[in-house]
Image (tube, rainbow, N blue to C red; front, side, top):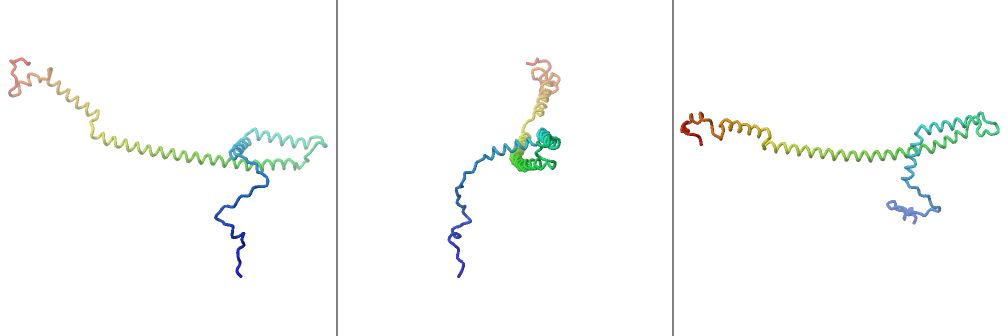
Length: 189
């Protein structure tokens, strides 16, 4: 007889999420952002000279008390097992908190990089647009009159007017030489 799936196995579907069960005890909720900010503050504090100095002073005092203090009040003999345990516990909590702070910083760096890349792309597009506009203006200005060309034309006209003399007519010598020109006996009107 072939193996038949049980009723429970046939009701389990892998393409659908499982129903959530209500926990027996409520879980405390912690804001990820608040915990992340706190871990970054802790990581920043652990990276300061104040923390290193304070830990050094603590360890030196601990060892001094347990070596030179009164025998009945020494609580951690020479091997300093309790001190080692405390430092290991502190390191076991510090390492994940520092990694969490680094991950958050990496996320911020990634967002800043994406924003910088988008800004650079916009700047590049703007620069390309302005380059095309300048090229179009240069092309349009080839057909128009430039300031220097206009000045040279005005100068040549001024020179021509000055050659004709006052009143806009040429000198009498020029007029006499032309055929059919005015004679020197008649005054210019």
